[in-house]
Image (cartoon, rainbow, N blue to C red; front, side, top):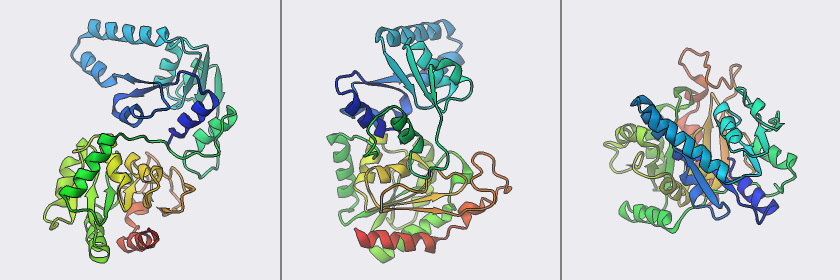
Length: 329
């Protein structure tokens, strides 16, 4: 959701060297973007393995070289979009004299030279990044997400379409995320896929990470080819390319779901314990969100595992919303 800032930064500073420091798992979202001069990958997982393997001297050497590399670039300004202690530490270690933190917490505010608070009561997608752009005097009149793909990514999606006979269209579902209170009822997804197949003649592609491969296989098993599991089988940009070519996307609060809106694909987002936004400024995105007295609970559900906010969303409700979107395409 922070990617619109790439366009804002490049517009404001057309000749600047713009680099983005990112953890390895998210780096693919940035490496194909022509408006970035550099993507610096923090090898956190590799360092974690060194720590667990008691290879502390090697770890200290790699940390030293990484900090040396950052300082050698002589950055003038660092913007900490995450606002956490870990990101604040890296902002400080760059040696940049200007360090701007967005909603800095966990003590990271002490590492910044300026703090920009996050806005309140803004239901638009990515409101904190819009607010940051406003505060820094950037152009944010067009603030769509900026996820760049390569020709190879698009060829991957084309090959998938040819292999599974999806040329008449397909639905993408993104049913997996990190916390159970954000999930929809698992059996509902298979019912949904069959309803969409029966009523619109299109199959369903399941997307997710490597941790979701087994769940995806279970979901797709014995569904007579209606559901095609790609969870754990694609790289991040390949999954994004599959989304870009989809007829419709339906998912829970996870990054892949938000990509539907990024690519202006008809999207239905199912929110419950979290509600990252209610307004996307895209007429073909629908948000289904059941507001309860305990909503949104975030990481601290109080329902004893009932997760009523998600279980009360019916297949019929989702199909009705999907019908409206598919008629518009």
